[in-house]
Length: 333
Image 1 (cartoon, helix red, strand yellow):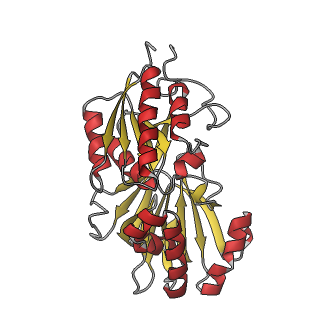
Image 2 (cartoon, helix red, strand yellow):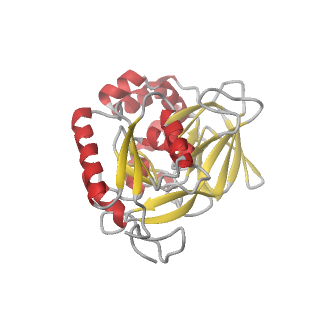
């Protein structure tokens, strides 16, 4: 492949999800598959929270041909924060507790199968979202310059759920830890009001979902008008503040009829400022990771990441044409 990518760094989270021994064997198989396709691939395990960001930044400095993120939403988010605004492409091997991007791109939840799709994938340059702290609201999870995200962010009950999930329980029961925390929050959350400023309007809500993808988490789709290849978010808010109202949303969410409910609003924009409208703190999340509490600004950063898009029946649609940042790996231009 004379004009293709010839080397890759595969960043792998050894503690993500369950069945770790089996998954590691699949990761090693993926490395062999890529090497046989002419892509010399080195394995780089993460070693601490945010270490995937450090590893990805080092890969950019080393001028690696590609970085492959193998893990769940959290691992992908860390890798994205290491690659943002660089030209180093990112591919995905789905693993971990959940992987919204894999669902969005229809990448099969099978590491060797997904690895076989990488050599024929296409590169697309896409925008990223960034969440930026306001009023000096910084923390270990939220640096002063902000945090990038690829799929979805939110504030309100979902932020409380993500901030409340016990890490140990998540390792043992995976996605069910979020369900358990969700039911706990339904019983105790105060549904504090959020002020959402966007497109010159001032809205009030008890939850705001900021989507770059149609998929949200688990089997759910909330920001169904979002498009990963547009330079915009889709915002979805809900204005009701009772436990019954939230509980009654679940059937509509399961059946894809959430937009028909009273109190739901949806619109597209490239930025928004969200802050608590009262005295109670409101917590937020990006790509399933906690980022502290409001006030926060959500903004689109155009032309921020090179992403590999699998082609074929199991993968996402290939780009309609090729440019320097849109070409099949290994295919001469």
